[in-house]
Length: 298
Image 1: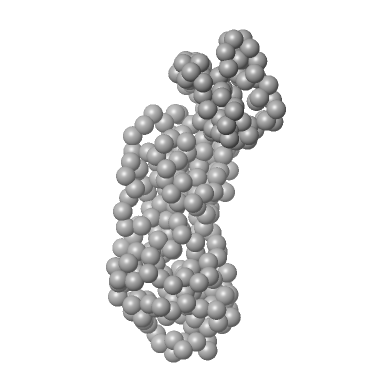
Image 2: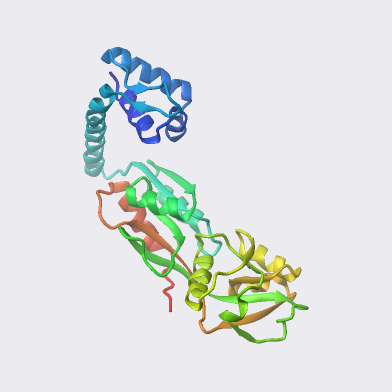
């Protein structure tokens, strides 16, 4: 029996799929299947029921699972105590993000962390906000980056890392182009352009509209504020975007201040409030908190 076999076994359990387990382990799927079959031969019992559409544990698999996890945890503990004695940090950290806003240098953050801790493997995953929150809360992600609404998700600690005032931008021939400002309620029912759900900008827009008693009519979404500005300049709707993105339209937009209430888009990093984060995860969280700007919010 090899530790690799136990690691493959636990990965298949956690992913509920041989294919997904292989992807998470960065190995070929046939190799995972072969090692699991070898483990089953050594134990003399099948560990998985492969008869259905999903992979399920047999009674033997259920009995083996806690011991396999304990063995892998013990080995990780041995490595950790030696690494702490030698000052070397190793392991695997996972950061999840809804998107990578240009105002934040996330690539630089991860590159600097890799330079400081070259033995730590880094994974960056993009996912929808609910998935990022759930994965961070469960410990499957060590750090999350997403748009923050009015409430902090339970079980998480957060730090605001980007907070920008939002404005409305329209083409020069739009009916609102002559107005210096509008109330948020004036945008009810109008065609809006916004970033996707889960971003700080979208969270700020939806929060403000909910307080005003309506849902925003978002007809077009784009992952970059600069794209929203260009779409608005072509007359496709009212772009709600950070003030810093307006200049990209090169004078082809009219900027309108949104008043009563003034909106802000906020992005936050989040990590588990409680839980046994390993040294590598703690180092990543501390590095992100030091590196990413804390711009505050009003």
